[in-house]
Amino acid sequence: MASPLVRSFPPITSPQANTLILGSMPGNASLEANQYYAHPRNAFWPILGHLYQFDPSMPYDKRVAAIQAAKVAIWDVLAQCERTGSLDSAIQEGSRVSNDFVTFFAQHPHIQLIAFNGAEAEKSFERFVLPKLSHLQTNRVRLPSTSPAHTMARDKKLHAWQTALLP
Image 1 (cartoon, helix red, strand yellow):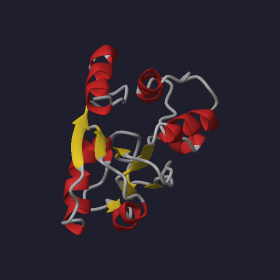
Image 2 (tube, helix red, strand yellow; image 1 turned 135 degrees about the vertical axis):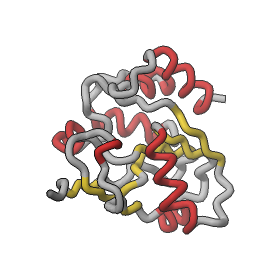
Image 3 (cartoon, rainbow, N blue to C red; image 1 turned 45 degrees about the vertical axis):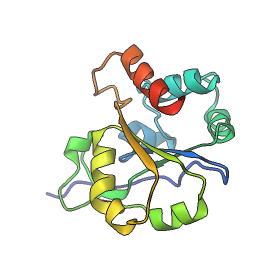
Image 4 (spheres, rainbow, N blue to C red; image 1 turned 90 degrees about the vertical axis):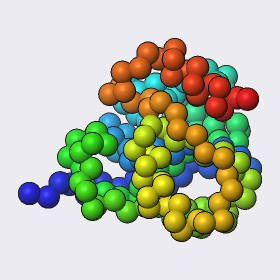
């Protein structure tokens, strides 16, 4: 029996973006809310709020504006995949389709750092995107996933994100 087809969102970005944070694919709570990182236990917005000095409990559109003002873009490596549930481990093999990063990087020449929100994002980027971008010279770093399924303590996640994003 095939898993449901899930699709990601358009990127949150601005022409001045210099950092790109990539997840793999939004979880069910995010898909239902039509918002990146909508699960209430996901540490993404609290971490970014701490790093970029905004209230992570603000309405979504205000958080988006704060991220854009910080010159940070948010997107997912995958445009679509088949997955039951929210876990990356549930993505059906052979169903991953990447977003159009050739166009994205052509439109965002100031991106200097790609930060992967977890291992699946990095793995999918290296497998499905990087071969199409042989000229890409952008620094890349894998960060601990902000997902509640990744059981690292939040302060350790915060430290790793802070070290990578605020040199």
